[in-house]
Amino acid sequence: MRLFEGVLIVVHIFWLFSFLFRFDAKIKRIINVITLIFLVVHLGFEGYRWQMGLTYILFILLTAFTIKPFYEEKVTLVSVNNKRKVKKLLYIFFILIYMFSSIGLITIMPVFQLPKPTGPFEVGMNSRHLIDDSRHDSKQKARELMIQIWYPAELENNSKDIQYESFPYEEWSGTLEFIFSVPRYLFEYLKYGQTNSIKDIAVSNKEDKYPVLLFSHGFGSTRMQSISQMEELASHGYIVVSVDHTNDAAYTKFPDGQEVMNQADAYSYSYNIEDEKDVKTRSKDMSYVLNQLTMLNGNDPQSLFTGKIYMDKIGIFGHSYGGSTAAQALLDDSRISAGINIDGPLHEPVASSGFEQPFMFILNEDYLYLSDEEIQYTNITPEEFQKYHDKITDLADFHYKEGIKGDTFMLTFIAGDHYTFTDFPYLSPLLSWNIDVNQFHQVMNGYILAFFDHYVKDKAPDPLLMKEEKEDKFYYFNTNMKHH
Image (cartoon, rainbow, N blue to C red; front, top):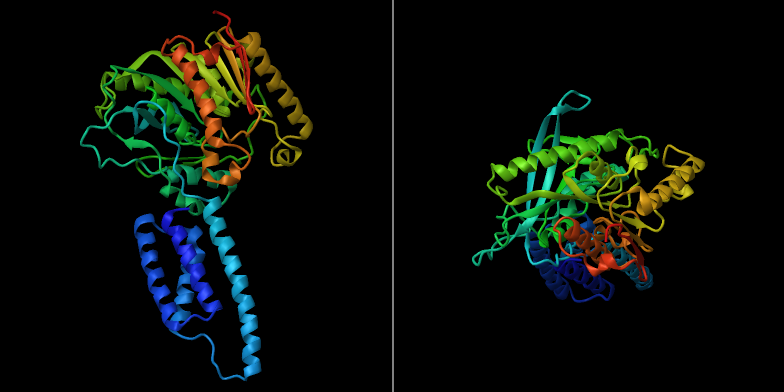
């Protein structure tokens, strides 16, 4: 709840009580003027949002009632007394409805601030539109990609007026429209959210170059799905590049205004480890992005990244189907040194062959499990899903133990669910009511940072990684370091 939103609701409740207890008309007019002032300030500084719609409507109604009496006193005393009792009950009922509705709406759909990164660097953010003429989509158009780059930055002494970027509501509202099949304007209020990224600020000169981490989003999601995680890693000295896999992403908007929506059903994910077509396309996206980063390091047209990208060792990670992509890219592209799969399955050919590089599994204890109620929205039966689930669980366990030649790690969360790994829980307390999201993300990002610091930055292994087994109240961790 923002400051003036809360003030407006409180003033309106007091205004309603002025009618209930028959305050003097002069007092009602004073409340009316005060409410108008707060409304103007709220709209000017905070901006409107539909969750406050009941308050806006109530302002108009109460203003009308304040200016002109809303009932005639041409009735008998008995009738007046009866009407007053009824009206008091109606006022009390309306006050309660208004309180719970207004406070409820702005509480379950809050204007939020993403957690502050903990690293020593400020965080810059830059968007790029890439066109791969060597590949074509179903319409025989060159494959177009949007990428988002977070990177270490620093503020100059006279940079007091620099503003952090607002939450990317277009990408998020398009994604939520795809997932929930509701109009995206319902999520327009997300634009009032705040990130910790500064658009197009210069790359920090504290270090000569910074290593690259690639990120792949989940099926029907967006490159913006885990901004808080991208900012955290960038604040610790990484250039983090998140890729929109066009057509597989829920929604992609290009600089020329072109919008591409995912045409599949939100629940049409393929529960088949042999179905590698899409994950191979995604892997090619990542290799193409690496090629473009090499060119940007040589000569960036925007003069941001020229000579600032360390390309000798690359890390990759992804969530859900993006975790599948990370594993596939490790198999396909030898430039990538280490990878992390965040709650995603392994597909073929990775499932059979494995790879050489170090790898970390970050999973939920109910690893991609669906209830019978959820399965009914998919295209498979409960029996088929159980067979699939047994297979991906066995594969994760096998590759952690021996199927992957490099060091392997497994971080398993007992609390949360599949979307707790992303920024989804920050959108509403309904998505995080049973868990401390900030603590969850601190643990997850701590292990991710320790992993990439060792295998990408060549730092000595953090004690977090060296402990063979660790158990906490909502996670446990296992280490299988084959070469130490």
